[in-house]
Length: 198
Length: 303
Length: 100
Image 1 (cartoon, rainbow over the protein chains, first blue to last red):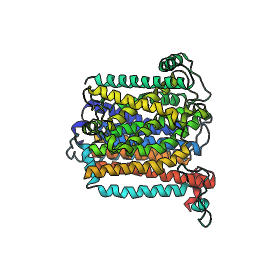
Image 2: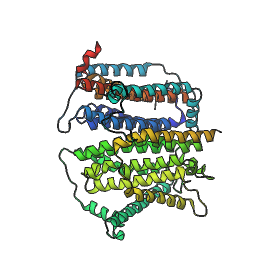
Image 3: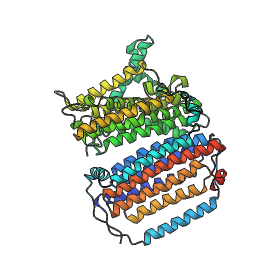
């Protein structure tokens, strides 16, 4: 007995739109590992994300859908830079196939998918637990974030800050000794002077 | 649902963007000593020239991605303007209009990069990377600047922000947020001081290899982005459709036109900002300023 | 539309991502596989939210998943840059000795 749906996700039009978006997201997701070009792979992944985000919009999750588009397009734009940096070649001229253990990976993935599908179909899902009103969803999310779930967001922010610091420390090739000398008493010596007059 | 808001939005954007291009043409003609009247015909002459121009083909160009980049630049401003009430109600009067605008302006990152990548040309690709470096500098301050009016109005819906300014325009007590927003608009339009991605020292950068209809779309897209961004800034900080005597749509169009023309006028008067230098300015100066403005507004709202 | 349908789509995304994460040699491509797996998770979490508990609390979970994706990207790129600088390689196979 499938659970009943909130009103906003009923109707055949929603199903058609969802199936379309689902197809786009899975196909572009698979294209990531099929296409030859790094740029195409990156932006195929971006398409997959945008399709899932639009599916969230059809669910009525407007804020999260738009935020997903915002963050993922930004991430993919930056990811493309790293792709070019690490693989300094034009695969449009030089097709690439850099994989290992292709067959084993394929077998594991297909087996897991079969297992998941069986689990999803067989599992006794509980019925819908009531529905929220669409009108004040976003305000409700804001109240939740700033109220009962404040702690979650408060813990995410220091972790993010630690990530920024950790990322810069790992990725930067120069330490403070390179910048300020062995006794840390020189003025900063940077290959490119900054924009605020240091 | 009536289609009036859709046509209204498209027509307003096209007319204002054409006026902006015309003003730019007149100013540019005056600078080189030609007749400003002839220069003002720039939108018409360029359109006619580019529509007849043959498309240049390049070795190993990634044409689909290249075309997506150019066409997307013309499409995104329409999506941006969809959440702005220009007189009639907004096409998409979304409760998260401001986040929507922000998501649309992030898509410009991808589009400009694709424009530079697709050509398979060194200058264009260098321009694409310059744009991403510039974007990293202006985007975060822009995000916080756009949050500020939302905090003051207590809503992310653009029409609510406009309605909240019936007494006092937000630009009066959020001048820093307004300035940073305009800088962001200039940034995602690859315009003026923030256009090193399309600079002359790169032979036009991301625009270098574009020809024919592709160049027309990308070029028109920049003016449309500038216009849509100005319309959004007008709605958020300059009271949008609010104003005495004249009808709302006229106020909105007039204010937007003033903002666009101001951005066009300052173009030639400012130096080009190098991305490597501007990055530090963005993170060490603009971001703290935007946060301070947000803090001040939050304190005022909370008290 | 049923919960099962959405979950099957999410499982498909997850497994395509898993294939990529297991089979790709280049670090950035492995990360794209991981991102695709998280993409499936986002869809699954949204489906669970929609069908079982349409309350804002569920949306907080989605925001956390998005935050995890960003953190994964940032640290992944930092490590990749470090390995690339030290060894001139961006292949996972050549960093095998990191396993100890």
